[in-house]
Length: 391
Ligand code: FES
Ligand code: FE
Picture 1 (cartoon, helix red, strand yellow):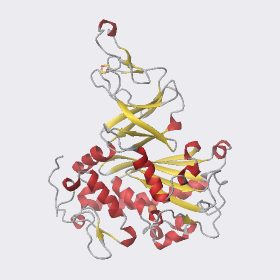
Picture 2 (cartoon, helix red, strand yellow):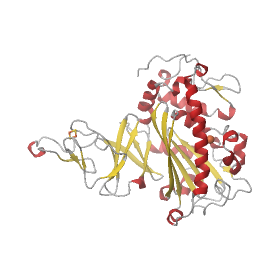
Picture 3 (cartoon, helix red, strand yellow):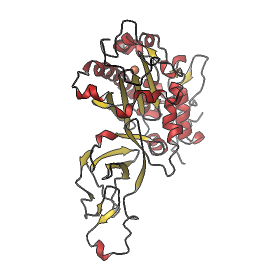
Picture 4 (cartoon, protein in one colour):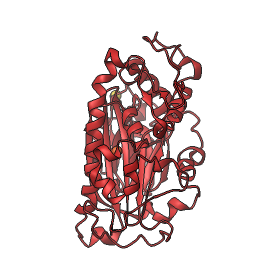
């Protein structure tokens, strides 16, 4: 891999400055289009990327298009009811097949340019004069397949030629965090219904959003509602990173809501150990899962540029809660405020990434040292020493 010469970058990702302080990444990691391109190639196109919620593609013929790294991916629901993913590129002369973010086709996908037509499994089934070209193999000239796995009710896609093990990467993030493979299954996330979705267009590099999610040093300063519900967060305690630990609701708190009022019934398989607790999981690079007894909040990031990230946040409840038309606004409002507060902090930070004050980066205090592990992971994915900032 070749890299462009990097500007002044004196410290390695996990450089220990003093017993208390570890260096962050240098500022240009958050602004440089070439670093972003490397991340597209080595992260978003190489790891499993959480693309769509499966239930968003309810009927056969439903499709979504999603930007994954530098590629646009088309996800369809087939006649058999399965989800399939393809590169959104016509095999004839390359026109983008579906321009919309989502939609529904009746039977097939037809290219708007010269009308090559593919079925929902990607096979080429018709083209003008195709009958006169018997040598054209309809499978070979079908759409290019992209690997797809479903988990937690979402379709995860991977553009790598040989995708990494889904179990050892995506699913393991939950095991590593919760200390137990079964723990996340108790929430039955794949059977939950969407109560609310909010999409945030964030003017910040995706790594600032990950780093923010990974630490709670800022909770006391910017999250008054969250620390009211989870008093231990007021200490800047990085509860996310103590294996198996879930932050406990305050004594007077009745539910994970903006005012601590009663939520909904505990999800059926959630255990008494998990009751009245909040667990946060980071599934690198782009997914955050928050588990509370009566709902699940799942964030998916779509990094679009070095300084722009779209975040889609889903609030998921028991189907009977959503079907009954119950008011979910008190629980939605809590994490929506948290999101808005975090986004404001990230957007406040992004412009400074190109300041000379941040050329060598900033520092991580002990409550944030685990962010250094994320930086090490990133540097390794970008090509080990090649991607490492130069001393
Ligand atoms: Fe699609 Fe020609 S580019 S049919
Ligand atoms: Fe926060």
